[in-house]
Each structure stands twice: as structure tokens, then as C-alpha cells.
Amino acid sequence: MDRKTLTLFVVGGLIVVLGLAFFVSPYASSSPDGMERVAIDKGFADTAEEHALADAPLADYGVKGVEDESLATGLAGVIGVAITFGAGMILFGLLRTIRARRGPAGATGTAAAP
Image (cartoon, rainbow, N blue to C red; front, top):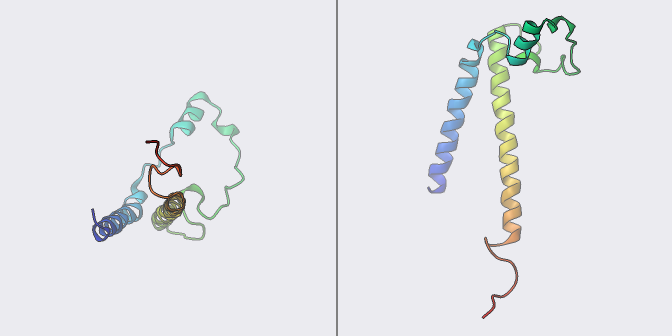
């Protein structure tokens, strides 16, 4: 796969994922997730306390300050995708830099024995 095809593939995939994050995430189930469901079933859900990040900008799958719940959820999805993609790009960039410094694959720096 050449560089142009790879770039188009990545950009196309990113557009699809961003679209899904924005338009589909507001329709996610509002039912309790696994851990919350167990807490409800076992009768200790009422003892739960707010965690330290409860007031964070993206807490509870929304964006703080955005009143429309569907919009807030969609924006949180887009921001999450962007952060994840950015982190992945940084990690792959670091890996590429490390590999470039080590030289060609399989090179150990010693001459082969005759």
C-alpha cells in the first residue's frame, strides 16, 4: 500500500468514526452499565460517592456547559475520538523515531561470522 492510499484510508476511517461518534453516540443506552447494574441488584448502589473527576469537562459522557444532552454526548464522542487518535499518532511517531535510530531491522551492529 503506497503512502497516498494509506493516508486516504486513515482519513476516510477517521471521518467515519467521527461521524459515528457524533451522530450515533447520543442513542446509546441509558441503562446502567455492568458494574452499576450489579450495585443496584445487590442493593449497595445508594452508598456510591462522587469520584474526584465528577466535575471534569467530559464527565458522564457529556460536555460541561452544553445544555442539549444529545449535542453534549455527540461532542464528547468526537473529543474522545480526537484525543485517542492524537495519542495514537504520538505513540506511533515515537515508535517510528525509535526504530529509525536503531537502524535496519535485524541489524545488531556486529559482523556476521564466516
